[in-house]
Length: 299
Figure 1 (tube, rainbow, N blue to C red):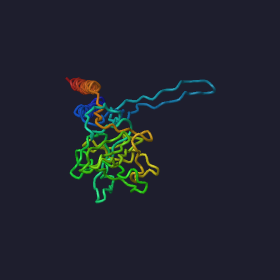
Figure 2: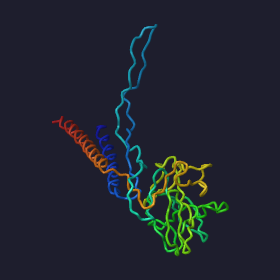
Figure 3: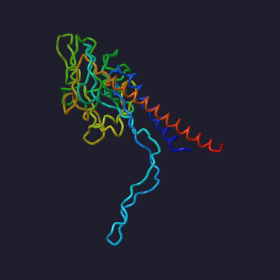
């Protein structure tokens, strides 16, 4: 069989994967906090027909010049499927629990809340997100649409406060509440006093592309994400940053960060993927015609 036929098959498989990624991007064009995917390709191994040879000298005379290697490529393959963490557009909602991040960093979400509202975290119970559509549950805790708690420091002004992650809650009798750009959550009590309920903390990564998508607009920590810590191990609130500090994002209340998908770009990628797929099918068709001519030689 011809090598070109197998090269065409590998190209078809690669462009199928690219079309899958483009389709998913378009499906999430209006998903809050969604980060688009991108496919890159690389060539497969090449079959060497002849190796390289250096110039041949004899008695100080050049008898023959050097020869380059002769290789035939065996197709292409998917090199990577990347998550592109560029800033999405901001949409104003005027809803105080809709939070957008302007800059680097992610909200920290968790489960498994104990009776003292401290977060007993494990890697499987902790997630990160740029989607800022939050709500108040029946106990007054700030949660996302799946019920995961928004984590931070619930004793921001207490020097002897607990040094671990905790959910932030707003009492039922609060007259009103607000969230500042530095993540501070305050509410007005029934007696008119303004009280700090806690401060949202953000996780910042040296390689956000290393995070793993786990659905519901959330990401999971991996060994290649590079979360900023002093000792390389995530140990709690001391390893998180305050919004607006250390190059992290600021919090914008009353707005949402939308998807960073550009429809014009995605439709262009869809066209190039479609044409690339068609071109590879043409390689297979042409190779089949050549084989047919070889079979017809016996006639």
